[in-house]
Length: 144
Ligand code: RB5
Image (cartoon, rainbow, N blue to C red; front, top):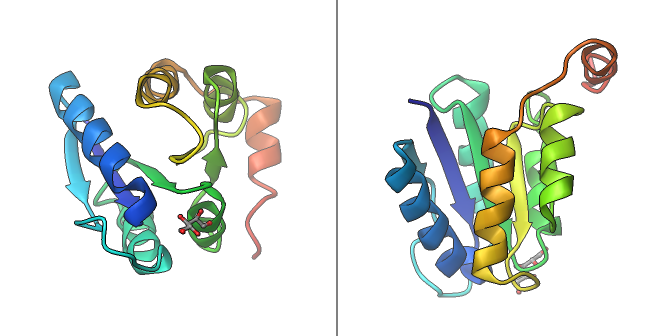
């Protein structure tokens, strides 16, 4: 079973815990790169190690969240091997996988209820990359 890299800041801490438990219940391995409490912190401190774990193959893909999702997504996408997609509804998560082969699902923890976050995560996990013209496009994303 795949290993999922998880990261959040304090605003996403509770949602991260909930989604990690859900992932484990589904049979996934999880690696928790923090944060580990609701104490105020800086999302890049957790996003960078989580991104590196996917880039170096220790984890297969990642799930991350902060209050809006924007800060942690911006940080993850500084990594050339990461395609992090901010998703607030299931259809966006399906398309992020089908068209962009997103290797990080990012969630806006302060703007969606937990049950919707689970639905978005399940949709992401159950969607498949379509390849073809989408592969050609994602091959052009990284800065060489
Ligand atoms: C934390 O207050 C908040 O700024 C952070 O979670 C995130 O929304 C930043 O993009």
